[in-house]
Length: 435
Image (cartoon, rainbow, N blue to C red; front, side):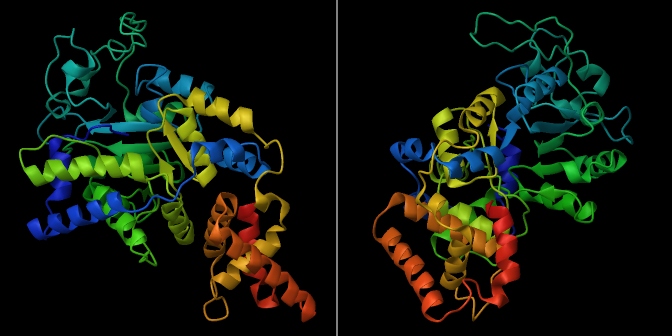
């Protein structure tokens, strides 16, 4: 994933058909998100919950995604980094994609893996200079991909070790059973068609999803693949979705398949664009550990993958909240956390000691199931929200406790089954996810 989109990415996202009116609304949405209340756990609550069986189940499930292929532990984006990331417990590999110049004007270039947009950023010692789209694959292969890697800014262990910039084909061929998140970077004319061709060549539809700052290329790749390649939300979609959730207007459906929020600080000559990019960075870093967004995504059946997280305490918070995946430059850190808390240590969560079928039944009642039959995703989301408030305590926890008691009492008093037969199928499906 990118930590700083280039200006053309920001321009492409901010400038829409609606023009300045659309930008003004985006800034208003951003401001509303930043000013909204964040519903999350405190560090003390996370430490308390971390010893529960429920936390152990969540940490087992969370996907360890190696950001830039684990660029904190080996030269980012290289085959060596990918190998080390997998050795260190990564479940997925994240790679940044750009396209080179073709051998001729009529020939499409090659998709390579590089976060850096210029040759001199990758290897300042090389005679090869220029932006990636200006260079051929042959020129880019001359660069030393290990030149800049260091952990202490004194030692550079991979300089001159023969590491080169890999192509996306080389990565897919080298790791035929590994899942990839592919981030489209920069202005890459023709990259969408070429990427679909490569993914089809390796029949990698089921193990690739694409992400990026701008929606347009993500939408195009998904359309070109006939919907077989799944995509994340772009920056504008992220803003609109977060604002809608905080207004209590969660959409009934979304166009994106994964919620992997993008948006970072970038420089711009236009004040409102620079301001908007900075606000997006604040929203991503400070507002996303929030149960409201996670519950909203669960209702939609949309997995939540948060990036980029290198701090163990922040990783634990995200696990406690129930995200499906965490991007990190240091997959070994997340792996250590997963091993440490695997399985949980005790019944600490209030919800641990309560029959999950009972909880699912109350969740369905809270969703007014007799007027609208909920989906399994609806019930899972409602249970996770109930769990959050039960563990935090307070008035909402008391209300949920009463609902649990009333639900059992009514079932006994009326001599009815705990779960109405009409709900059995949907509750059973939800329970499979809640195990």
